[in-house]
Length: 117
Image (tube, rainbow, N blue to C red):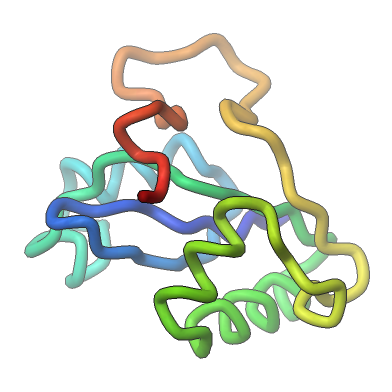
């Protein structure tokens, strides 16, 4: 299973990525050298939204579509207004927190401070 996610970063910017493990990837973005170059300069605050995809090609397809959207459209997507044509077959939005394991101290969660507005 692959996950496509949108992070809210410091300064209110948004970052979109793909992973097989949301908890691990969020931790990498926050504290390790394995995080994206962008998130080294714009520290992640939380995961705003996430979708599951059955395989890597579908996940990358959705990631590319989200990255191509203007900021206003990304904020609408986070708020739940996703046009069906945007989501490739098999991609489904998942609720946050969306992880099955017990929460770790640095676990990503959606919180009021991260809601668009």
